[in-house]
Amino acid sequence: MTDLLLDSLQRRMRTMHSLYYQAVSTMEVDHVNHFEREGVLPIAFSLFHYANMQDASFMLITGIPPIWNEEWQDRVKMSIDDHGKHKTVDEMVHQRVGDYEAFKEYQRAVFDRTEAYLDTIDPADLTRVLIAPPYPEQVASTYSARCAGPEGITVLDGFECWLYQHGLRHMGEIELARGFVGLGGMTS
Image (cartoon, rainbow, N blue to C red; front, side, top):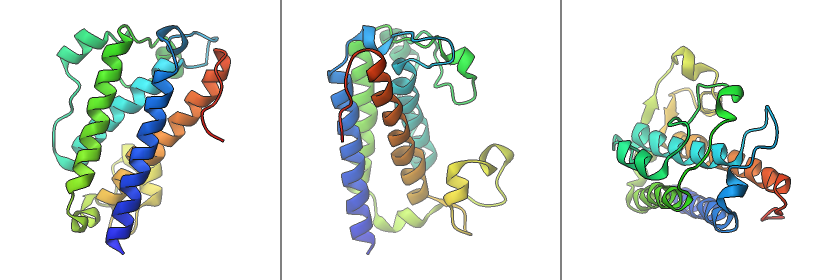
């Protein structure tokens, strides 16, 4: 059963990543940085937030440091060098991508690393507990804490909640926002 679960997770992550690749390949930087109105985050936010959060979450799961560093920031030139998880919409509405091609390289590096790790993970590691209850205040109200079993948030929960489900949420935002800039959705 574990092999079936791992195979499903690997396929779902690759498929979701392919949606992000399709999205960025069918948009220009003007689409990504479009300002709709106050209170509406630009596509740039969703793209960077998700890639950067996958990068950071990967470290929580594997112990491997994030890829994002000062060199990447110098290349990508995000207007706000922050994934924005703990910031308000009012703060993050100003997020913009400076170098779109460099951003796509960063996104691919993050996604490739995750997929490579899933290709080599020992299925037994999926049950390793990352955060045990009682949860710290910052974790207690999260989706992953609600999904976790009595033992706590496991590696599988981390991949499912922090990477897969989180990615789909932001892909939905991107698909909606594409309509604001005259582009259609990508799936039915």
